[in-house]
Length: 431
Ligand code: SF4
Image 1 (cartoon, rainbow, N blue to C red):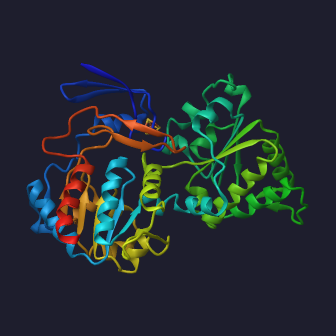
Image 2 (spheres, rainbow, N blue to C red):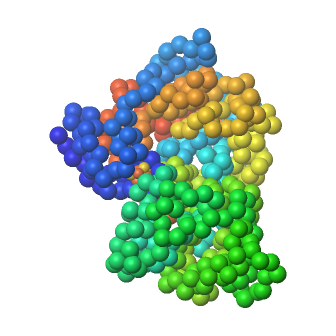
Image 3 (cartoon, rainbow, N blue to C red):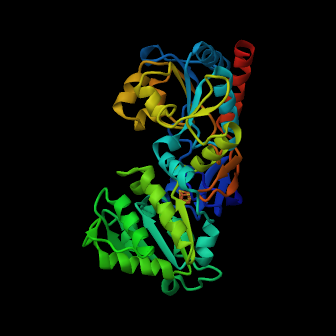
C-alpha cells in the first residue's frame, strides 16, 4: 500500500490540500482528512464512467476509437458557424488553455460555469473593486466572520473547520475570540453552527446592505426597519462590524443570484470598502466547483476577460448577457457545443435545453451524465486531481497543484490532451 500525503481535493472551492490518500494496486482504498463528499469522490472515482468514446445519438450511438471520435468532433467544429465552448470549472488550467485555442481558431464563443453562478460577483467586482484577502488570513486573524446567503456546512463541508472555527496565530481560542454570524432567509445548517443567526426577508439584501452602509456613514434613516431587521438591530450589527479587529464577509449564491444580483454584490463590496476606513475587512465569494475561480483567471490571462468571450471577429470581445452560454442557447444562436467537464443538460433552463437538443454536442467528461446522454460525440477523460495532475485556483485565488494519485482507465487521456488533439485537427482546416 502507498500513502500519498498533502493531496488536494478536487471537489469544491476550498481545495483542501491535506488529504492522505491510500492506494493499493492502482486502487484508492482510503481518503484520510477528506469530508464525506471528498471520500465519495475519491473512493467511487471508477463508478459510472464513460468507458469508451461514442459517436451518434439515441439508437444510433455506437462505440468508437479515440481517433474516430476526434475526427468526428473536428468535422462538427470545423463546420460550425457559431460554436459554444462551455464548462471548464471541473478541470485543470492546462485544459482551459486548449479550450480557448479552439474557441479562437473557430471564431466561437467560450464561457465557463461562472456565468450561471458567481458571474454576477465578477460584474460587481468590475464595478466596485475587490477588497480581498486570503483564507489563511481569515483563520489566523479574523475575529468576526459573516456568511451571507451561503451554507458551507452543506456545500463546503470543511470550510468552517479549516478556516473559521480553527485556531490561528492571532486567534488562538476561536470559541471565545471569534464570532461567526449567518445572514440568511432561513436557518440553515451553517446558521445552527454559528454564534448568531440574522434572518432577513427574501429579496431584501440590496436594501439592507445599503441601509447598513448609510448607518455606518452616520446617516439617519426615516424608516423603522429594513429587510426584516429593526434599525436598532442594524445599528448594533454595524457597530460590531466597525469594532472588529479583522472581519471577513463570505457570501454565496443567496446574495449573488437573489433579487438585485450583481447590485447586491456591488453593495456588499462598497460596505466592506467603507468598513476598511475604520478597520480591516475582507470579502470573499464562496466559489463552488473546485476550479471555477481558475477558469475565471485563465480566461482573463488568455482572452482579457473572465467569462462570456466571443471570438467571431478574430479578437476577444466580452459581453455577459450576450455571449453567456444560457443566453446564446435561449436565442438559438449557437450551432454546436463543445462541453468540457460540466453538465449543462442537467442545470440549464428549459428554453436553453430546447436548443441544446437540436445541435450537435461534443462532450468531454469522465462520467456519464445528462449531457452525455444527448451528446453526438462522447470522449471519456481522466479525472483532474485524481487521474491527472494540473493547477487549480482556490476560492481566495491561491493556485494549488493537483496530484495524480492513480492511473486513469486504459486509453483515457486528460482533457488537455484530448482538446489538443481536437485543436491539431482543426489547424489544418481552419487556419
Ligand atoms: S470541503 Fe471541499 S475541498 Fe475540502 S475535502 Fe470537502 S469537498 Fe474537498
